[in-house]
Length: 203
Image 1: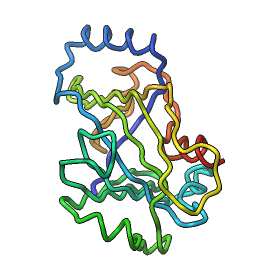
Image 2 (image 1 turned 120 degrees about the vertical axis):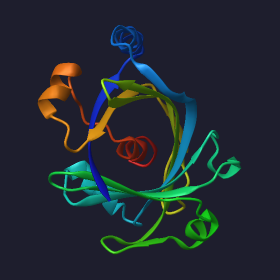
Image 3 (image 1 turned 90 degrees about the horizontal axis):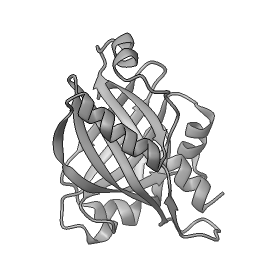
Image 4 (image 1 turned 30 degrees about the vertical axis):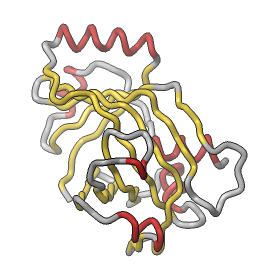
């Protein structure tokens, strides 16, 4: 796992327009074309990963299978990657296993040493824009959609569109925090798509 810095900011539509102007003023480079990201999140039957996220317990993890350019997870024509994100007291780390056969994980679940058996819970899809500002990677997520896939929950909603947008700053762990604060003078906020998905669909 490679540690990195991740900082987030929740945006409104008007914030988004102002941010695009700000990026232009900073001579931001477009890293990649905008694309759709779709992830299926796994958790224990009692949603222990969600609870740890909500309570800020560390270390904690998120387990997901990710694919691209499809709003429907199972309709994707692109490879599926297994991603495990770990949050510790001082670092955020991510490991990626590429080109997996996701059928077995969906049918049988995923075993994690910390959490035990985990099963599919929700799909989260959104459009992402990618920029580079002063060697710092910046992404903007919009059109965030949550869809229930788990079968162990009693619920009213099965799908929910989040009106918020998310600005995320990602930098090498050695990057100066003072530099980030000076270069990106925005108020940081806590924004977990998985937490919001569970809140919107199950709670």
